[in-house]
Image (tube, rainbow, N blue to C red; front, side):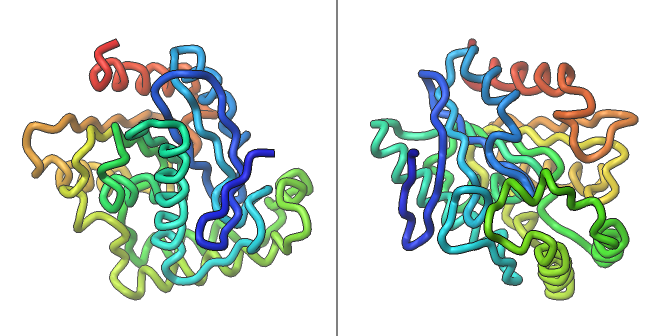
Length: 259
């Protein structure tokens, strides 16, 4: 079982395929293999896919999952150091970064704080900043916790997964109370090509907020920026319209890699 210790945090990962590295960061309550569809598509196209369980999820323990008020920044630091260590082992310089939802927020932060490791950044279901209306929305959709199914719980053995709901919401709303800026104010520090995608019915990630992020990122001239929206689609674009999702990704990669 491939594991790396990153400053005391165990990170479990899989490597799929051979070629240019591509890191996929999953969302809240997920594990890496929830994105095996994208991983297999990328591997078939000649990429070496790095598919980790983000710190504290799935098999990436100990320590177990927690939600401090800065958990996005904490996760970016851990996963950035993980990526640096793994790329060194692979003899590679950089990787394409992909992230969904919470993993998308981390991907955007990696594009800023670990820019030298990022060949490109693709995020969906992420916007880099949140306001009070989104805190209120998070409280509404998170409770009651009946949506946390036995299947979800089984992905994270020996952890109190139900308690994560309240912990996540309180941390998220604490971020909002502190101003709500995760990465928006520094979006122009992303030096790699950027693709941001949102479903037009994503209640937690409004299209106008995503457009604002990409416009801020576009202040860095001469770097590819793409913003794609999907009508009649909610948060999980990759599940609801998979072929349109894959098409957007591979169109973007063709521009970045020239293939």
